[in-house]
Image 1 (cartoon, rainbow, N blue to C red):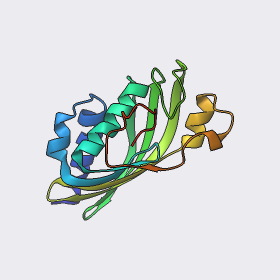
Image 2: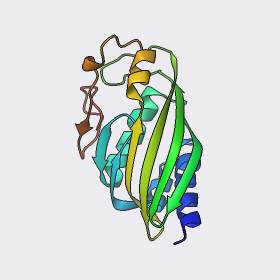
Image 3: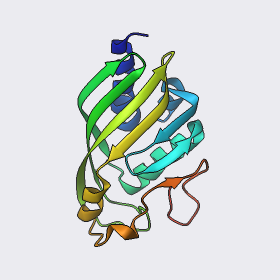
Image 4: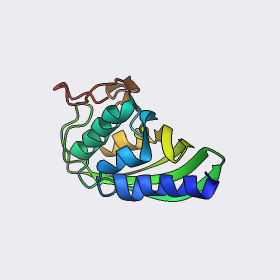
Length: 159
C-alpha cells in the first residue's frame, strides 16, 4: 500500500475508532495479533487486549479525544504527533474520578501491513497527565504495565 493509504488508515483509526468509540472498526483496521503500547504506558497484544485498553480509557475519560496535529509516513511506517484531552470521570491507575479536564501531548508510531495496523507504539506525556490529576508523586502511578487480558480485573490496574 502507498504511504498515503497507510496515513489514511491511521487517520481513520483516530477519527473513527477512538474519537467515536467505534470498536467494531478495530477488526477492520488492526491485525488480529496487533501489538500495542498506549499513551498511558500500557502494553497489550491482540484485538481483545486492544479493545479492553480502549474500554479502560473510555471508563476513565468518557469524552477522551485525540487530535492528530501532524503525520508523516514512509513505507509501512506512520508517525503522528498528537494531542489528547478528556475529563477524568472514572478510576485510572487507582486514582478516583477528579472531574478535572486534562490535556497532554503524545507521539505515535505505527506499522501498517496489507492495510492493517500490526504494531502501535504510543508515548504520552503522562507526567503532565498525572500532575493535572493532582498526583503529587509520579512514583504512585504505574510506569509500564503489560498484560494480554482484560484491564477490568477489579484492581483498577489496566492492561
